[in-house]
Amino acid sequence: MLKGIPPVLGPDLLHILRAMGHGDEIAIVDANYPAEAAGPEVVRLDGHTATDILEAILTLMPLDDFVDDAVFGMQVVGEPDKRMPVMEEFDAIVARYEPGMKLKLVERFAFYDRVESAFAIVQTGERRLYGNILLKKGIIRPDA
Image (cartoon, rainbow, N blue to C red; front, top):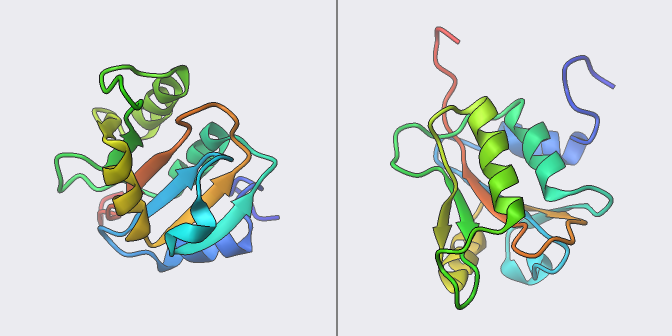
């Protein structure tokens, strides 16, 4: 155990977060997501929700404020403007750590394409539908 680091962030995930550079993306996906087939390295955290993992990651990782959007979710198929309750939770967590940033929803297959080029994927045990989020890593400023 380490002080100040959420215990859900094990050594494999901590290594990934530290190895990522500015602009790299990491996906946190639900239990239904085809993570193993997507391509990037997969860290499995089956006993945890996507919201718990998002909260833990954002305690350590800054989001990219050089781009218009740094947080992406998957649109509901057939209802692109619908926001599922898990998406509202994602937005609330992001706002606590990165005020002003919001979840941008993208079409399902565009989301899959982004995840395929991500640095890594965290597969959670999230059972809520559309419990998928992609984060673009930012920088630590010298005054932080």
